[in-house]
Structures are given as C-alpha cells and as structure tokens.
Length: 571
Image 1: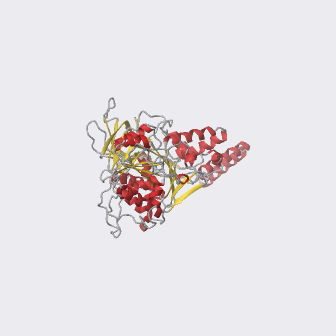
Image 2 (image 1 turned 90 degrees about the vertical axis):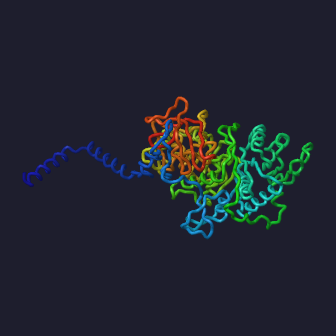
C-alpha cells in the first residue's frame, strides 16, 4: 500500500467524522478535555512514599516460643541500640565526639542558652502564662532560673528530700521540677484537682515530706493529720491574695509543718541571689521523678518511679519522631492542653523547651475538655490534648457540617488526605468550612500545625478511643497533623505513635492503630489467656521494653495485634 493510499484513507475518515459532527460531539469532546485538564492541574504528590507507610516497623528475625518477634520502628533498626538520651556535648568537646545521655538539668540549660550553632536557627523560646483572653504574662528566663535556685535551696535547707508538686499547669510547676533536679530532690507529680482522699493516698504512698501547692486546692488539715512525714508546705499564692498571712499554722498541729509562700521565698532574698545555676557536673546524682498513673478520672492505678535516663530517652525519641523540617523550633509556640502530671504531656513539654520553642502555660489545661478555652489568649502552633478534649471538639464541629455544600467541601478535603496522601490545601470549595472549624488560639484557622494526643493503655475504657475517621476529620477541621500515641504507666512518653504523614483510613474507618514504636522503645506480644501467638497470627499481651521504660521492661495488661504494616492496634 502506497503513501498516497494511506493519505487518501485518512482524508476519507476525517471527512466522514467531521460530516457526522454535531452539538453532542462538541459537548463530549469539551467534557473530555476538561476532565483531563482537571486531573493534570489537581494532581497531588503524596507527602511520603506509600511504601514507607506499608512497612512501618521491623520484626526481629527470631522469636521466642509463645512470643511474637520483637518489633522496632524503622528509625531504630535491630542492629543498633535504642535511643537512650539527648547526646549532650559539653563545652569544648569535639563535634565528632559522642555526647552523653544527659538529664533534665540539661533541658533547662539548653532552654536558657539557646541551640548550638550547628543545630540551625538561633533564638531562645519564651515562657508564657495565659490568664484569660486578655492577659498573657511573659516570664524572663533569668527570673525563672532564680526561682529554681531559691526554691531548691529553701527546700534543701529545711531538710526536704521528697517534694510533691500539686499544681495546675504553670511556671511554678515546671520551676519546682527543675529545682528538684538541680538540688538532688525527688519530684513527685500529683494529678491536680483530685478528691481529698486521693490526695492523701498519693502523699502517703510516695512518702512526701514537702508539698508545693495552691491555696484552696490542698486539704491542709487532713494532710497534716494523715501524713506524719509532711514537714514543709509552700503555697503558690496569686497576686490578689499576697496580702494575707499564709504562714499561720492551725492550732493543734504543734507547729510540725513549716509553712511559707513561693513569693515570700523569692522576694525576701537579695536580687543577686540565685542568679547562677549550680556548676555543671555530669557525674552528680539526680533523683528520680515519681508520677501517678491515671487512666480514668479520679482513678489512680499505679505509682511509677522514672529515672532521669527514662525521661531523657523519651524526650530524645520525640525530638526525632517527626521529619527534620517539621521538628520543634524557636518559631513554634507549644501549649500543653493536658496535665503536666502525665508523662506524655511532660515529655513533649520538655522536648519543646529543649528545642527552644516558646511554651505557654494555662491553668485550665487538663481540667476541662474545651480546646477553645484551653488555647485562649495565644496562637499555639503545637498542642498536646487529651482524647476526651478531641472527642468533644470533633462532635461539636461535625454537628455544624449539615448543608450539602459543607458536606461536599469536607468530602473533598478528606479525599485529599486519604486518597492523595497530602494535607488539603486552601481552595474556593474548602473555604466554605472555614467558619465551622474549631477556634484554636486567637488567629485564623491554619496557625496550628501539630496536635498530639495519647490513648491510655486500658482495654476497659472505650469511650476515649479515637477512630481513624475521627482522626482524619480532626486533621481537616484543625488544618494540623494529628499524632495518635499509646501511653502506658511504666513507659515515659509513648509506647508507640503514629507517623507524621500517616493519614490512611482502613476499611470503614471505625478502627484505629497506634503506629510503630518510637526510637526509645520496642515491643512484642506474648500469650495471654485465650489469645495465643502463632506463626499465622500475632495476637497477645503487649510487652514494651527499652531505655524509656521504668525497670527496662513492662507488660501493659492489654491485648494487642500487629497489623500487616507493622503498626500496633488493640486486638
């Protein structure tokens, strides 16, 4: 067949096509072009390669009888040791030398000195106290250092050794914790706003001889009668009550308790006193921190003693748990909307301070389930909240998405998360839901970038669990990435934690998982009752171990399962 015949047939076919062309043909062709153009223009690359989400943890090549393999996250392969500390390098040390694990004293030293030059942008974070929506107080770091020294010296001079901190989230809470670290005292973190009998029980179990607390919250008379070890009481008095005499000891107490106020200790000393921290001594002993585990309100299940090594290991794991570009920095404002007496909240707060992020304390945090109220007055970029708080936020926001247009907008944004693997971007359609979003902070939606939440390890409690659909909705509502963790009594920080870019929904979205282990932990499953570990199914009691675990290893008392992607979930 010659070239001429081919061209003739092509001309004949084209003539026939154009001869049959009509309005329907034009409409179909236009629609086809629009569909192709829309697909090209709206194509979004996933934020992380799907294969990295398909296998988030690695099992050990060998497992013991009646146990599953030991699982580690990809950031801590089996050939390397788990993350044990902060890798602190002392002044003058070679940048090639291996640093030491450090302790909580190094967290405050980094807070007041700022990041080293090789760690990126310079700048010191601010410490703020939020008093309602109109008043935010910024504390000078030098003033907090002075409080740390004077409070630590006062407690030590009075013979104190075990210091119970019974305060809401505040600068005084964190200053007392650091005072205990610098002056070799045992810090005891008591959950705030507890019934009188619970407070007495915690004091008795811990053997506290000193209490730092707020007037009106602490049962003074009952504590003195029921806790013979109690010798000191330090009131943290607000400005409006400074004129009262808080040093008076009630009759019948025999003067056995030395009562003073925080303000009195700080103000009665010369301005030059306590301005310098004790000399750095990496070999000096630093006492443990005692935390009371509370998986349900008004229920204290276990008293746990964390070493400094447990805490710094957990802090370091959180610092490296997010991509390098997204890590805490001096540009962030961190707000703990959950109680600092929780190890998860405490570890994240200390991680923010070590990263020189600004930190805002609000006394209502942890005592209410209203995220709007907890974040009022500031514009946080990172928040840690409780499951109860986020469930309430989700329920209230979902109830406002009722019209067809807002539902379509929500569907488009959810599709971007689940199908494209990317956070939804601002668009004309997405803007319809902007007014329905929860108000977090005093700026427009979009300021918040990270939202942390931890589920307490307790199979009996199902009301607080967040499903994958709920987590996806929260990402859409807040415009922030939500990180969901599993917390346990004897594990500082978290046992496992979802990855930064994991937006997936499996099945109908009613289930949930807690991600892979952090770089400070590893876990395995063992036989428990009717649940047996076999070659085909890894289901059993969760056991965690690592440098972040008190005692090195702990059984969680919950039955878990390992998903095909290596993440941990309840069985």
